[in-house]
Image (cartoon, rainbow, N blue to C red; front, side):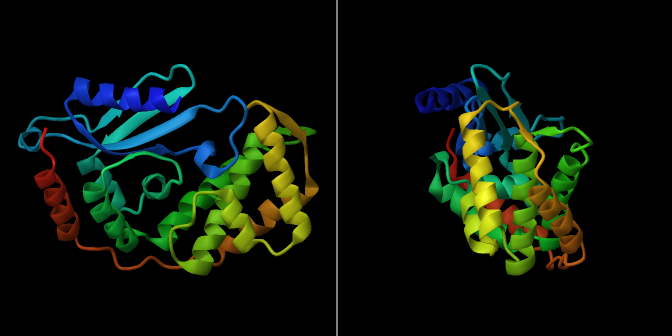
Length: 254
């Protein structure tokens, strides 16, 4: 599959006449709890030739390919990415810190990563992760069983928010690091790790019995963390993003 992914990235560059500077896993495989039939969620950042940006016409800043053969692949243009970075976009911040990288042009990506540390906004990020957790909670309903996927999404995003509250920086993507650092209760750790093992052995739609321990943890933490959300830092000036944009364009030769 990795060879297929790399070939797809090469084909995208040829077809769209762009330079891909970063490509990574963005979903459950990078989070540390893929199912047996999980897609490969590949996300990438790309740069167009300098002249492509010098026009008043409307442009598309996204490349999306149809999902096929377990491969879900799409990417954002550099300009779009930097605009979203200034808003502390959580998916983009996760791409930059993904533990599974397929391609990384360091001389172009390093300035973005450096800027991302200044662009990170704790309040905005907490709202993002709590929103995901609450959306998952809303699907619990009154059924005896629930999709294990929903539990894992809620647990991970709650942990991400807790990390931000305690550390005021971007949380690690992999759930094992979050569990190890943040959870003190051995019973809860063991329960979550058991759920991870079950998820990795079964398909995406696998159902598990409702867990009072997990649901109490999610509900209590969601309520508690919502009262502890820190304020945002001062947003970097737009000139800093423009400087990175121009610096990367200078490096690209398509």
